[in-house]
Image 1 (cartoon, rainbow, N blue to C red):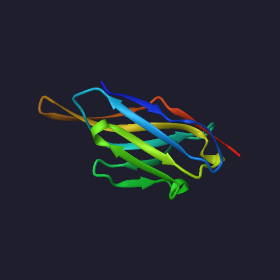
Image 2 (cartoon, rainbow, N blue to C red):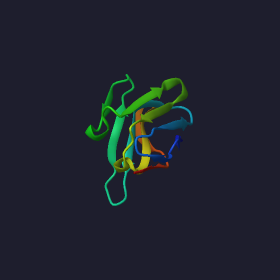
Image 3 (cartoon, rainbow, N blue to C red):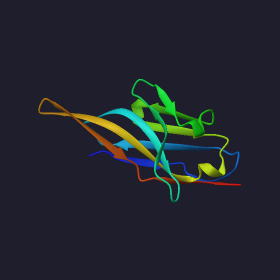
Image 4 (cartoon, rainbow, N blue to C red):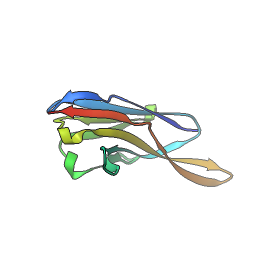
Length: 123
């Protein structure tokens, strides 16, 4: 079983910065893509940034140039540095890991989600 633990959320003024972390615990799995999503009140969950196992990254247009996603494969951890934060960035942020395991000669794919961390940006 894989568990994801997030940290780093909080309250910050507009223009400030935060760094989110999400670490996976467990054994017997490999991680494919890692991603950050967010969900604001009354809105659908949206993809913010993702990073492949090879290090390729992709960002939502709304955060390009302000957020940076990175990963430490040795620690099974993904980070997101958020700079120049805006009030519209206020949301609960979730990490998601795509994993693969091997059993009986077969490959099994499964996604895991973190518990969410609140980011609030005041104007």
